[in-house]
Image (cartoon, rainbow, N blue to C red; front, side, top):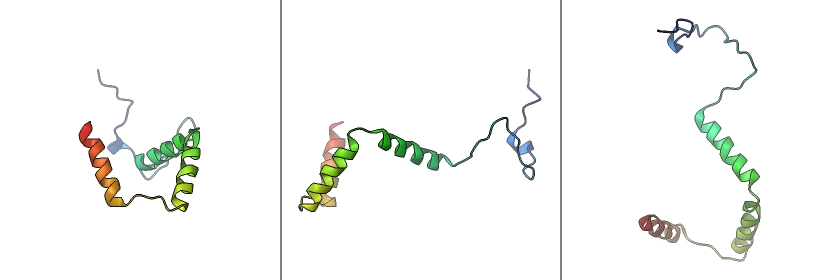
Length: 80
């Protein structure tokens, strides 16, 4: 039996605001994923230390070229 109380998106009058039971925010899925990634980073206990160590190594001249990094990542991907 079809539920007639549920409207399809196309049937909604988009010129009028939609009233919801609770306040909400509508964002794109890309923005949502970015927020979730930032939260994961913010919650990380080890990442800030790793980033600080990486910046110190970089300041001392220790770095990897993009070409070498791509080669290294390619080897990792091939092992999987």
